[in-house]
Length: 88
Image 1 (cartoon, rainbow, N blue to C red):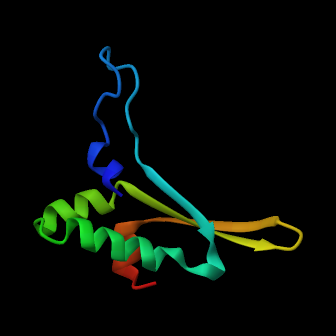
Image 2: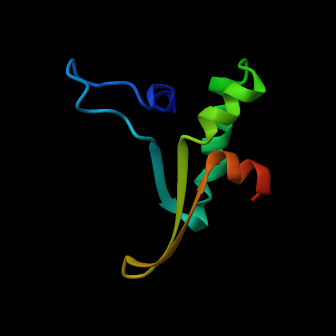
């Protein structure tokens, strides 16, 4: 989660490489989005509402529907902020 705090910052001296965002891909049935949201709340809970929203918008949650034998059926993508707003 802390990597989301560095979005847009250069990773090298010349500024060629930058973090564009943070993406979590997980099995929809396991609902890791809730655990990710709890980690974000723990890490960013002391920041202002505006800062939390900005950070949450940098984090994408990709919930994947899988079936045996490990077949990717579908996926849906939302930002952490959208996930919180929807109360998914």
